[in-house]
Image 1 (cartoon, rainbow, N blue to C red):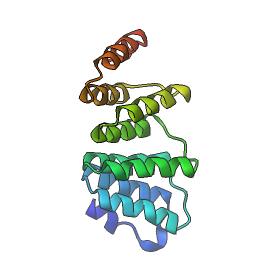
Image 2 (image 1 turned 180 degrees about the horizontal axis):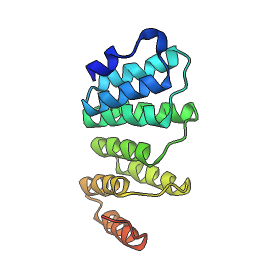
Image 3 (image 1 turned 60 degrees about the vertical axis):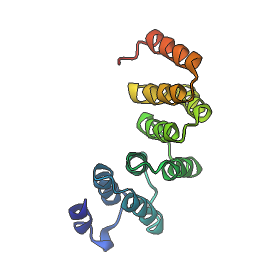
Image 4 (image 1 turned 60 degrees about the horizontal axis):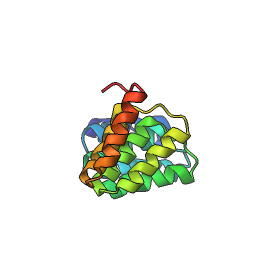
Length: 153
């Protein structure tokens, strides 16, 4: 990740270079640097993309910084950056860490409402969150939905 940052001259900051740097930070679990890159995008008047936000959210989530991941998710909505299954997965995983099963279910409903194809990461995070909250009835219902939707585990 450090090398990726060194290769990025200040005069050439754009969404592509920042997204690449954010990806490197994600893989190195450097959540603070990932957030700084997102901030740098706005300072350069560049619009972040679903890729840059997803990477920064994943870096935060992997580093157990779920409040930061959720702030990024909210920022995306405010800026009208369309979320995808990866972004929802990172947000739901962050919410799982916060043990907020209601919000987890709400986000999954939003995924379905926006006709985004659910994957095992999203469903697994929702199931884990509900299980942590001792909501076995929801876990059973979600499991049935997974089977009915033929989601591959």
